[in-house]
Image (tube, rainbow, N blue to C red; front, side, top):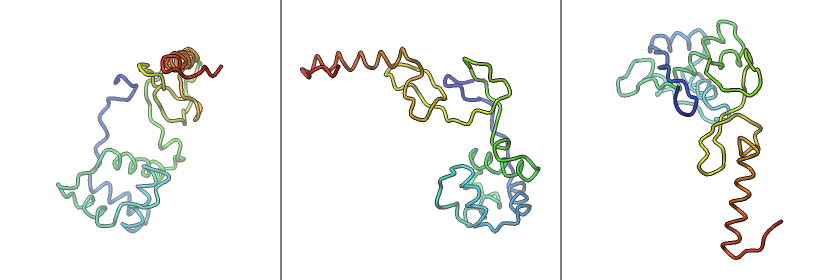
Length: 157
């Protein structure tokens, strides 16, 4: 585990032949497969990978290696072909420190860092949540008040 809770497990190796087999199993053209891969990586993407790029990946071009993100997206597609739903296919096991019992739960949020300068905690919370704890939120407000007093601005409270 890294400092921020990311898995240090090396990504699974995906061969060009396996990538091509996944595309053929889906029955998609290279252009459509490029779009599908891109949408797995980034669901809001408006443009996919080009058919030329997919061709180079499938050909095993040494100048165009299969990136970990593309390998992960292709493995998600392969799991979906095997009958898993998209959430199950995207989910991966990581070590998480939890306040409540969440064993067996799927965490759908994205990790973000606490907004308090100097706080090194990464957390999954509400989309508008900026601080991992009330103490950090209060400390940030205290720092703002001190800075306002030093700059000669009136206090907002």
